[in-house]
Image (cartoon, rainbow, N blue to C red):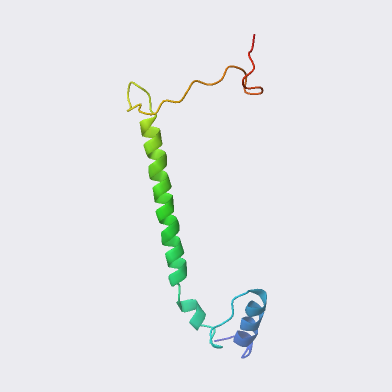
Length: 91
């Protein structure tokens, strides 16, 4: 209300020049209303994140120790040697 009369037109021109997106049909507010693609992308990312968390928790539970967990997944013992040169004997 207290801005210069040409402030909106100048601001829109600057933003349009700096970004790839353009206003739809010359109406700058119209492009701000449709957030459906962003909501869909957010929902998809949240779904993927939930699936990955479930996989991680299932692996942690299945590979937990023999005393207090399921212990269905057993990894082979580590190779002999140090962390600098794995596979080399330390004798």
